[in-house]
Image (cartoon, rainbow, N blue to C red; front, top):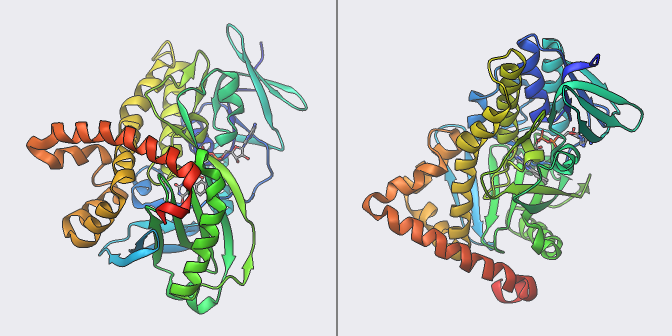
Length: 406
Ligand SMILES: Cc1cc2nc3c(=O)[nH]c(=O)nc-3n(C[C@H](O)[C@H](O)[C@H](O)COP(=O)(O)OP(=O)(O)OC[C@H]3O[C@@H](n4cnc5c(N)ncnc54)[C@H](O)[C@@H]3O)c2cc1C
C-alpha cells in the first residue's frame, strides 16, 4: 500500500502542530488534516502558564499580547484581594495567532497540511490506517488524533474512556481602552461560587476574554454565573461591555483515571485524549506535552527502536496523568473548603509563592502532599473524603443553584 505520509495528524491545534513539528524535524513524512482554514478563531482564554516556555522548542514570544504578574482573586464575588509576583506567571495570547504561528513552524520544518479536511473516522489494517474524510480516504502508517474535544479519531479508535465532561462559556469583550490598559498585567479569577466552577478575565491587548467554566453537569448555571460575573466586573472594576464579539461554549474533556492512549497504529493527544487540568481548565500546556510525546513514540516505532506505541501510553500516564490526578484531588478538596483555601492564598506568602511556582513549572501539584510531611497520610484521607463530599455538593447545587450557595 502506498501511503500519503508516514504519520497523518488530525487537527492543527497546539497538540497537532507540535507533534508535526517534532516529527518533521526528525525527517518523518507528516501530513496534517485540519477541518478549518487558518488562521481560525478558537474559543479559549489562551492563558499560557510560564512553564510552557520550557516545552516549546522555539520562541513564541511574538504572539504574546500581555504578560501577567498579578492575580485579583474573589471567592463568590466576595473577599477580593490582589497578589503580585516578582516574576511573570502567565502570558495571554489569541488562539488564531498562536495556532497559526505553531502550524507555520511545523510547515517550515517540513510537515504538509491540508485545510478543509475533516477526519470522520479511522480504520486500521494490518500495516496501515485508512483516514476517512468527507472527500477522500488517506493512508498512513500511523495516526495521531489531535482533533480536540470533538474526539472523532479518539472515538473511532475506542480511546474515549474515563473522561469527565467539563464545559466553558467565553466571549471576547471590547471595553474602555483605558480600563483594558489598566488591566494589562492582571488576571481576575473568581472561584468557589459553584462546585468545580470558576470565572476569569484575561487581558488581550485591546480587549478582554471573559469566561466561566466548570463541570458540564452544572451547565444550566453557567450563563446565570456569566451574567453575574459581568455585572460584578462593571460594578467593582468599571469593566463595562462595549461590544461582545463572540459568545460561545465549548467542552473541556477531563481524563480522570490512568488510561490507554494508543490503539495499535493510532494515538491520541491534547483535548482528544482528555488531557486538561481539572482545577483550572488549562489544556494548551498538556496538548503541547502530549503532542511532543506522541511524535517521539511514532518516531521510535517507525525507526524500529520500539515495536509498539505502548511507550506513549506509559509516558502520558507517568509524565502527565500523575499531575492531572493530583490536580483532581486538589479540586475536590477546594470544593469543600473554597473560602479557606481562598484565605490561605491571601494570608500566607508561602501558599502564594507555591501557587506562582506551580504556574511557572518550578513545583507541581503532585508535590503538594510533600508539604504535609508526616501528615501526608491525612492528606490522602482528606482527598478521598472530599471526593465524595464534592460529588454530593455538585448534586445539591444542580437543584439549588445560586439561591443557597450565593
Ligand atoms: C472557553 C475555554 C477557555 C479555555 N482557556 C484556556 C486557557 O486559558 N489556557 C489553556 O491552556 N487552555 C484553555 N482552554 C483549553 C484549551 O482550549 C484546549 O485544551 C486546547 O485547545 C487543546 O489543544 P488541542 O490541540 O488538543 O485541540 P484544539 O486546540 O481544539 O485543536 C484541535 C484542532 O483540530 C481541528 N479539528 C477538529 N475536529 C477535526 C476533525 N474531525 N478533523 C480534522 N480537524 C479537526 C480543529 O479545527 C482544531 O484546529 C480553554 C478551553 C475553553 C473551552
